[in-house]
Length: 232
Image (cartoon, rainbow, N blue to C red):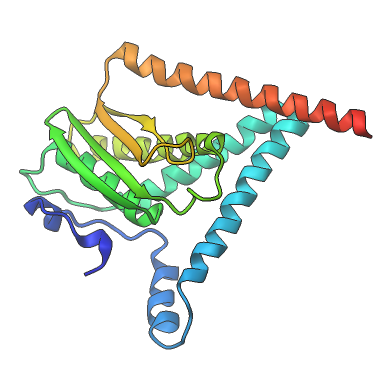
């Protein structure tokens, strides 16, 4: 059984979703993995190269173009996250008895185990909260602690895709927000996330923290630009 298929909740087996980037995935499975000696571990090396390039592009845009460059990259990350979420949920029909907490937790598992290619330990804590631990992330050995900020924009797009889905289906009442509690690159043993029905004040905290991260990044970029100009 593939690792992403394994959850104990009965409704998990009834949660039928779409695999993102299905065309390329089918070719990989049928024409490459099934017929050649291709080592799938090299996909991790390829993906790490893409991830590190993204971090460098973000830093370069911040350094060269300031807030406008930062926004350009962040908007792109958001659109990519939104597209992933839409692919996963397009045309999906949920069981009538699936709770909002189950849906949020199951959707997070698809994101974590497939889109992020990570190993996770998920929990449905209550009707109002779910959480999970990422016990291995492909980025953990090469991302710096501050690099994880890019995930906020991917994730925001993925969350907004669920809100679109909920509005169309009419079966699930959303309202869950996500909190990044700890990350492995920052020295924690796992990346721990909580999704819960946030109050208006708590939602404002997310936006406020994002703004502080953006300001910190721009300050670092300005410092790098000054140092480079002095060297030139």
